[in-house]
Image 1 (tube, helix red, strand yellow):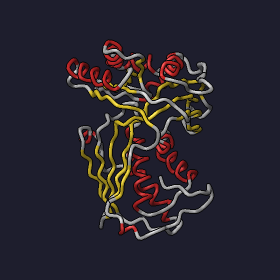
Image 2: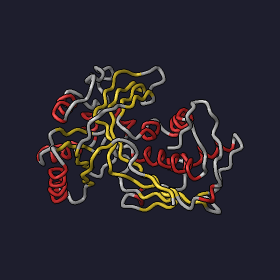
Image 3: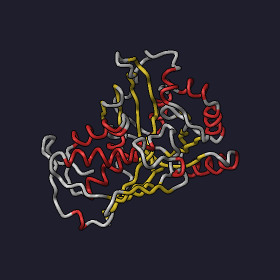
Length: 317
C-alpha cells in the first residue's frame, strides 16, 4: 500500500507511470474467525463485532498501462464473474480511484487489468472485496500516487463494507458495520483448511432470517498467547450467522463436519458463508485433511493455507 506519512497530505504524482510496465498485487482470503451480531441500527444495517485474519489462499491482480481500459478474468472461478458492469468490484475500485484523482488534477491513464480468480465467489472469505483492495493498491503504485490511510479507507468504504478491512490485510478486530478497525499485533498464525461446497449464500437473506439481532459481543484476551491458549479463546467465540446460513444451505453443515472428521481442532463458518475453515495442529495435518476431503468431495473447493501478517505479496515489473 502506498501511504503518506501524514493523514492530511494530498496525493501527489511522484514519477512517470510509464516507467512501470506492470504491477502485481495478491488479494488474500479474509477469514472471519468470529462474527457476533450485537444490534441493528435505525438505517437497517447491523452492528457487528468481528475477529478477522488473512490467509495465503489468494486471487491475483495484474495491472499494466494501456491505450484503452480493459479487464480480463482468468482462474477457475473467473467464468462466474460479470466483468463489464458495476457489480464487479475491481471495476468499481478502478473508477472510484480514477474519479478521485482526476478531481484533484492527477493523471489516471487507461489500464489493462487481469484478475486471476482462484477464490470462490459469494463465499464469505472476502474475495471480491480483497480484489477491490488489491486493485486500489496496484493502481496507486502504477499511477505513482501517494494516498494517506484515511483516503484509502474512504475509497474502500465507497466500494464495499469489507474493502477497508482488506486494505489492511492483517489480523484485526472490526466493529460497527465493519468500518471501525483495530489492527491486532501480536496475533497467532494458524494452519487451516478452507472448504466451500460450491453454493453461494445471499448475505441479505441471512441477515433477514436472523432470529436474534442483539447478542453478546466479543470477549477477547488482553494479549494473544500461544497456539493452545489462542485456540481456547477462539472456542469461546461464535459466528451468529452460521445457524441461519446452514438452514438455507445445508451443505455448510456438511462442510464443517468434513473438517471436524478430518481432524480440525476448531471448525466454523466464515462470514455469511458458505466457506468453512478448520484449524489444524500444523501444515502436514492440514495437507492430509485437504487430500482426504478432496477425495470425499471432488466438486468442492478445498484448500490448505496459512494465515499471516501483512499483504501476501506484491511486485512491479
